[in-house]
Length: 129
Image (cartoon, rainbow, N blue to C red; front, side):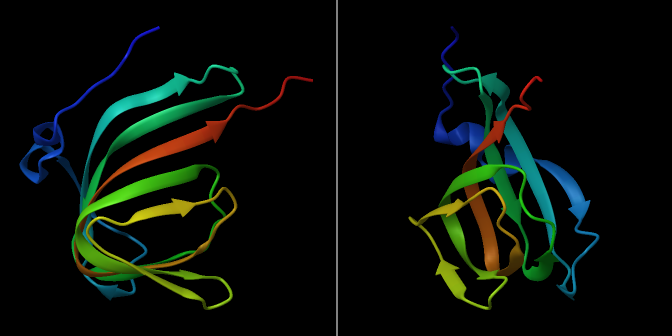
């Protein structure tokens, strides 16, 4: 079993890899950058895997219509945004907030001030029949 660790500097915005503009944006010109720490680390029950990394995104908005295939938990370092559920309920977040996007969530992202976050994504493994 391997333990993984990263200092805050590891996730500094200057250390992230640009991904370019979001192709589904309908407000502004959001573009983002990421840096993974770990990808697809098997959990102790071996029924899921965990990925951890950092994400930064410029101002803008976009629909997230497809239901999530992972559960994501993120902590906001800086910036402000809003997630809107399919039913129209709005959830505002900013520095110091922790957000959980459950598997199956869909809705809308709006970034009011550039967001920088660190997140964990849990992916359930497909059951063998």
